[in-house]
Image 1 (tube, rainbow, N blue to C red):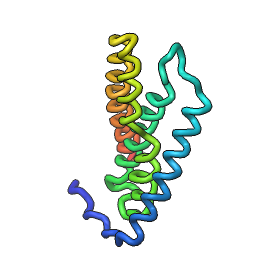
Image 2 (tube, rainbow, N blue to C red):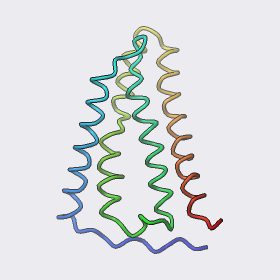
Image 3 (cartoon, rainbow, N blue to C red):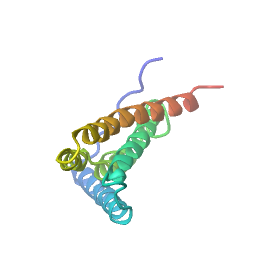
Length: 138
């Protein structure tokens, strides 16, 4: 089955505010979670969990774009995918946390950063797979 045609373009005057609003919401949510959930044993697990959870939701979104209900909803994709999930996930904070951890324990830092990246890839793949199965006829 061929891929669906690309969605219609969204004017920058509409796209930029959507991405800005979504990014603001996602960043605020991540900041609040990081402020409320303390590190465990010195490891900031919140940022790792945010990135893995965000990857799963992004996988679900991307899977839904392939012939699913979001295929023709570029406004929702910009708001949620680029905006909210772009602001919510943060590999720059993951890197900064990894550098801070490496000062005391390089093996722990490597496990934290490497584990977050691998789990994020697996979570995104799972999200796409879950959505793909739903989109296929039974």
